[in-house]
Image 1 (cartoon, rainbow, N blue to C red):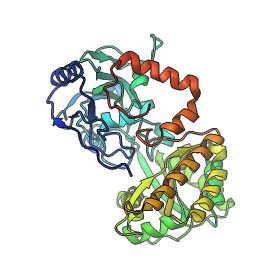
Image 2 (image 1 turned 60 degrees about the vertical axis):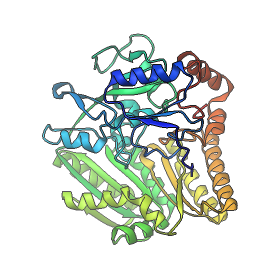
Image 3 (image 1 turned 120 degrees about the horizontal axis):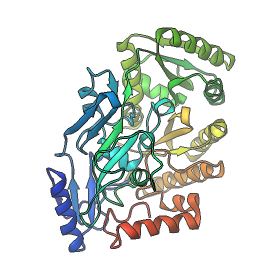
Length: 425
């Protein structure tokens, strides 16, 4: 949805010293700075709306330090989540935050990314221990102190948290110290179809209320399931569906599966399908991760736009049912999918980018959905960020005092307003 706006120049630094020199040079000459990881964000975060220099960090792709006994790793911004997990394959550890795309890990920090495993393992906000950041004027900051990777601290302000989700507006993240997790002993996945959206989402709420330690719980509406069946050659029922996954010991998994099946059957679920071996599970989750491409295939030649709201779990049935009705009333082609275990879902809207009237309808639908989430005490973005398109919704979400506080923080760190200008604020 956010058309490419290229910078005046692109530079590929090889190390943090070069990033520092570049930032100081640009800042001294009043030139905007746009950090670039892999460019998989969907809110226009790498658009150079005022020109300037794109600092492309993909050549800085080293895993700097692995501390398996302390469950931590230090990575440069060119390291993607798949590359890290491939490196960890024989260590008994993994990094579970999974936004679908093979994103840069430091880019995931910058956008506050999340994904299918967040209900059990948390988001990037829960899994970042320390950051190395080049400030706009070239100074180097270690947000938790140089070389530190402790699990908790009461020492001063949470500088690490300040940069998680900052979307490149406060500095360039040149290394991230991340929290790792033990690889689970066993996994089992399942799909189950429901007679209605209400029944599927009620099951989600009941599973969480029953304290079943589900690792993933994903919702796909009937249109999305039809698209996934066609695109990924599945044979699932075309109905509102939950994809679930459980991690743990064999004994624990048996108990979790039994309890979940009881809850879902109580809510009218049918067509249960359990996937225990790795090949079956991979096929299932590959289909879920390819939902974006499956949706695009419903209308060849179209472009996609993904909304991204998050509400308290108890309000999820209400907003999903209403959103389905709004989608039908809008006349737009779209699907609903989401990480409903933490209240986050997306509408993938298909649009002709050359049709101004349709673009306006997409914009109106997205704003209406964002405001509906705010009215239910939720947020206008669960994981994609503010970028270019949600600045007005952010103001409505945090209020005048919240916005003024953010502007003061921005002005303190970036007084010339050159770091990724036009985004967030």
